[in-house]
Image (cartoon, rainbow, N blue to C red; front, top):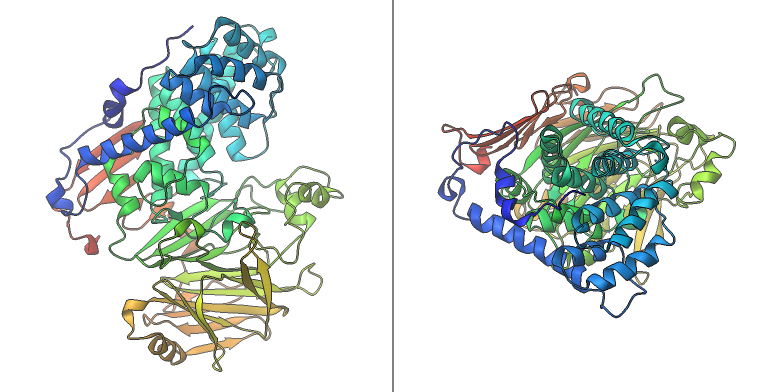
Length: 629
């Protein structure tokens, strides 16, 4: 049996040292601005939040109550060395009915590594035998396989010489280890060349962070441990550039309806709080593995996640999950664009069927004016509620005759005309900075031939103007929405707080679209001045024979597009062919590069997956003026 790693002694060192890591002197606080935290203070603040989370799970279940508590509670108590008798008794109860498949595997793996020196031998042997008698389903999504194979890798490592008959797989420890390693390396390679398929999911990002945290903490192979560290950097960098004070902004895959209307009530809000100290405090059990791992977010990621002093455009290239029918390509490209300001963020993808069931094609999120972020409903977006066995058959292997029924058993919203998530093959979206265009060309035989646009109850001064524009403001964001076709308003009951009612703009027209223009309140003397400025903007809209638009934004840029054709910005077609994996002031990566360069002022951090190295340096001549990033 392996000795459990002692994290605290090497925690700070682990944040700085890895295989091949090259260090340069860090930029001083003066170089980056006196408002930034000194590195030692920032790291200590992270360690304090980490301890707060572990203490929360170590103490929330009383030692005389054996009826409640999950693996996160047991793991935290074992880490803290408290209530060990409770841990053994509660574990015995949980082991009577193992369930959850890969969602069982990763917390149990963390528990066994973190607590192996503190569990009674009888409990330990009982837990080991579950890996023979309980057969976890591998699942069919990217997050499932990350949890499954990271857990299988580490459990095979923990029991390296066990024969096939001791495993539910019917394979030996070495065979399990080799299969898991092969998948993990292939997934890392795919992610760093053409992007994730379950991209930017506010719900599932945590269960990518958890398996990578386990590998970083427990993998004995130095190269795998370094790769895990790099993937944690990679996932957090991807997340950090698209956050606004803890909220994950822009377009997403895999987001649930109850979450899409509540931008701060997401699992990733807890990750932002723990990793960066940004946003509302929210304890999440998925973060226990991360808190125990010894990983400390590098300084540059803290700055990327927290500095919103200047507006910026951020570009990302992702991919669809694997397509098995109705497509000429296995992984279609996803083109993401997000514009972030201190007051709000507007983000989008190009539309289409990019993620089954739970896609969010575009979103506007603004900062709540009263600071009550967790209760805020600060968002606006639109959806063409497409439902078809063609979409599901593109991504799922079930029989086409029953596939909608099968999906609706767990995702009840999928086959609803009122749904607020999902992609559509009849939707096309493009964006430049804080202006966005959505075009819809819906066939008559479509199941739900209309457009839904969600207007939250946090909006103020909602005004339907004679010009055709709908005006409103939320926080310090001034918002203008121009629907191409007539519409009606319908109520939307909040799924979290049922006392609240929002509005759905319902437009039952096949040739349809909308223009969205956002601006900071500081740019205008009044709300009325903003409305006057938007009314004066050149706007040409047509729906016959297909939807098309030419719109001059408040910034003077001309957005032009016709459904089915490549849109233009100031007369230049959007260059989808050369869309980067990452581009913007903070992150740079080319498609196929297997590299990611992080930037902040003069600071640089390079992840090179070809050489499995991390390099950090400071550019002496780089500007320290954050507005010139």
